[in-house]
Length: 172
Image 1 (cartoon, rainbow, N blue to C red):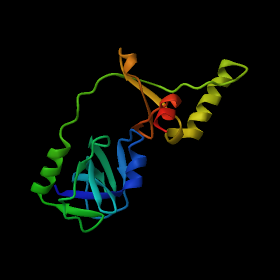
Image 2: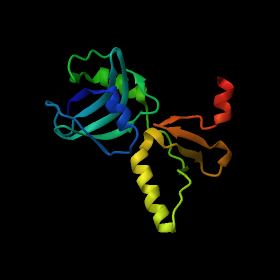
Image 3: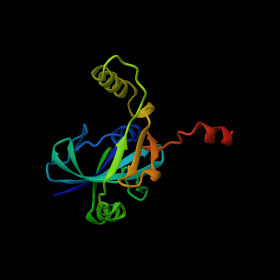
């Protein structure tokens, strides 16, 4: 079993972190099924380790541990190609920085919007149309720990986003 660093462009990582996919498909040669991978989001000189995975087939990586919300520095890795073989020590050093998966806790997630419609069924159709059209780039999603509604936060594009226009006016 070999270990690899796989570079993905920062914009691909930004898109990938919005959805809970089980696998990542990449167009590359070299790694075989069963090989381990550390995924590196690269943008010019900034390189961050964003996930650990395992190749399930050539060009298909199954996520083992995502660090999308808390990437770790990967600048100490010498990466010569989009896919670079790593020695065990280098791979383990980055994998240790990424750490174990955090404990999963229940969260409530909500998207709410006013919709004018003649029937509840029509309102639901319009809702899903808006969700598909606006997507995570424009549609704020509200999330809070189960049982703690006062901790509600708005997120857009996977990052906390202030939705209070009065607070925005105070900042200006």
